[in-house]
Image (cartoon, rainbow, N blue to C red; front, side):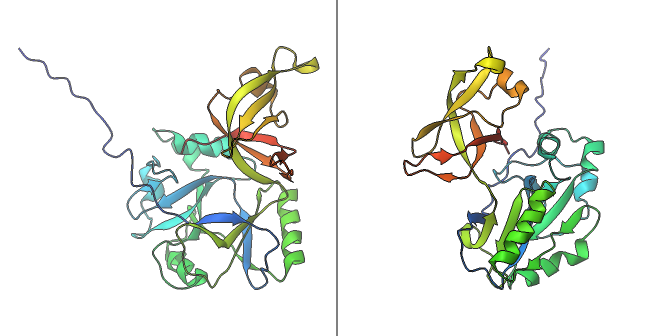
Amino acid sequence: MIKLFLLFIPLVLFAQKPNLLLLKVYKDQNISGWVMSEKLDGVRGYWDGKHLISRGGKIIHAPAWFTKDYPPFAIDGELWSKRGDFDFISSTVRAKVPNDAKWHKITHNIFEVPNATGRLFQRLSKVKPYESKIIKIIPQRAVKNRKNMLEFLKKIEAKGGEGVVVRDPNAAYIAKRTSKALKVKSFYDTECKVIGYKQGQGKYKNMLGSLVCQMDNNISFNIGSGLSVKERKNPPKIGSIITFKYKEFTKSAKPRFPVFVRVRDVQ
């Protein structure tokens, strides 16, 4: 008698990696007449009309009730719950088996309608009929001048927000990194690879003192700030990619005042 063993694999694990609008960094450009909004610190969620997909092209396993009233066209936004809640958002969104109770705390905050024509507000108007407790259009406000934008940034950061996004509302949709959409923060952030450890001293004796990291330009530097005791006892693995924030670059191309933020989300 021949026994058959069936391997059950989810029908869809990966989708085509989407080409998305990506932000450049604000560097004192003239942004008068642009619009601004809070930069939400969540997980990017791209809806292609059938599936919810991560920035990296992985299927996000949201509950069926979460996406049942989504539009039949593409929308792009941030899966988010509240400020300072990234770990919860990331673990909820990355789970292969969705947790209903956790997903009830998640909203999809829309800032773009890929493939739509017209200016920003014309594109976003297509989402209006689909707004709900789940789908929300991120509010945009006019930028009067640089001072006005920096005042808004200060208020957002005082509330624990990540930063601000400023955009040219007259620009067509651009599916790449563009100077028509900029991120503004008191600190910049980027990524690097962990290539080593330095032993801690004093209160961090027998724990990690700092991470030895390397950027894409092969510049190496240490990150000792921003790490919790738990992370010092169990540091990110060698070879892992982490996000860190910094004030500026020195003349030798090293980040000034680097602070550990998190291990990069695999999504």
